[in-house]
Amino acid sequence: MWTRHHKRRNTGRLIVPTITGLFLAYFGFHAYHGEYGIYSKIQLESRIAEAQAGLDTLVAKRRELEHRVALVNHGSLEKDMLDEQARRALNVARENEVIILIGADR
Image 1 (tube, rainbow, N blue to C red):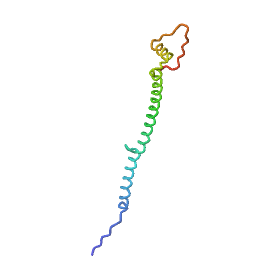
Image 2 (image 1 turned 90 degrees about the horizontal axis):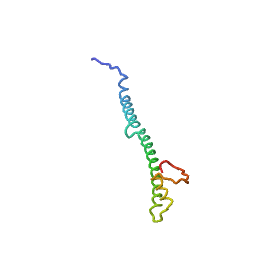
Image 3 (image 1 turned 135 degrees about the horizontal axis):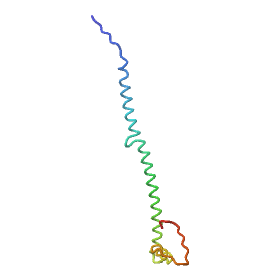
């Protein structure tokens, strides 16, 4: 009777842990760098912060413009405001006036 002796190979013991490690590395990489990963979340939060800052600036500018329009619209027309706007639009000043420009965009 012949008996075959098989040597135990160490490679068989490493196949399952190697495949497991590769799967974990793959999913770990995509969990961090993927489209919905951690790094993408950080980038999205920074874009949200930038957009919120822009929105706050626009809201403040709109409130200022609404206030200026309210000074002209409510029936209590301020003559100084109207005079200021007309002079700015026509680029006209009197000889005895001193002009102080507060902002370039006004």
